[in-house]
Length: 491
Image (cartoon, rainbow, N blue to C red; front, side, top):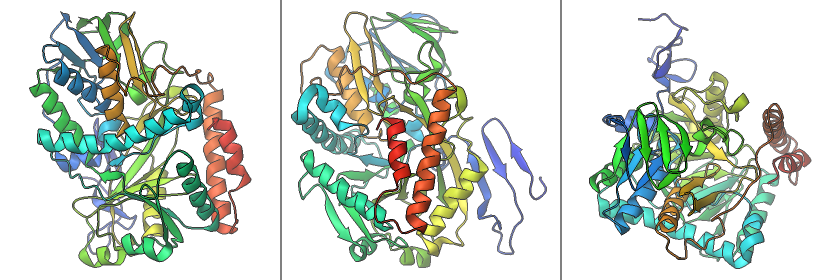
């Protein structure tokens, strides 16, 4: 038992009890059974997977995959599908899906992070158009695999709305449409909605318009990654959990429980890449946080008007992302503390109190009808960010070392395309995937500390201030502060 206002923390999650109102809900806006961390709400809802055994000792394999998130699992899936006799071993420090794969916002989206100009610099405009086409195809590929393999992950493909709530955001909406068209998008790929048309789908307070694309599906992340892990195990892939890889060498993955020797070693760690020796400045572990409400009563759901499974984003600089879950909750995410000094990581998803309050306030600001609906769970996770904010897939045939990642938060679909591409590269196949412009890219490292910490903090401070100015001052165009932030990031 605990007294009001006392926080209790154990190794897996943090509970916060606050003063309760007569109806049994907390006056802070948090549910009485509120949880902070414990990896994510998705596991609270779906249940944590049964633990798999650790590596029993040194062994040999044909392929060793370090990291049992979606990138590694998809690579294993396609490798086994194409060559069933391969001996594949996966090594995971925690459990399959512990990282971003089981904590993300559930957007199975065709969105590709990063600079398309950077991709075009090596493969031309046509190469980027092919990459965008491949991303749209990957959305349907994931849906097809889940159906054929019997993975139930609450997937519904109803598209995504990006809403604009002030004049500056409306300007960026129009710029975004022109930008997509310049890279080959058609009228079927993106549709501009008026405020009324947008509200007919999802009633967002102050929405002036929206950009809709059908190339996105809602998914329950923990169900997807857990289901895929079970499928690849059934195909004969060995997944060893509670096995931390301390270093990767050509032909060898080193752990305290023994070494795995294999001619091919694939590093699939995304936001945890910085934990490997020599990789601290390669991909920045950027933090993103989420909250989820209690299930919405029918009366509130009617006011919100969110009848379909559309995903929801916006055109703010400190952007948000949201979904209506299968059990009628609103799960909404955004940036909290974006980066911890020295590439430090969170503790099992626990996020900061002010981040919880800010995201909860955003839920109520966008959906005033939810003002009395408590937040039931909050969590965070890290995503991998290269210095140019642009993803890459790489495999060196000489050393047998490969990697994929740097998805900058747009990784749920991208993991499938990247894992499939890695598989083709390992199998020495010349395919449309291995010719995509993100294959074999080289990116400079991030600045050393304290410069990268200062740069990230300055960037997001500028973005937050720009959002406030655009909202409160009614700016007709994008704030100059945001343009300065864009220059800092190199985006």
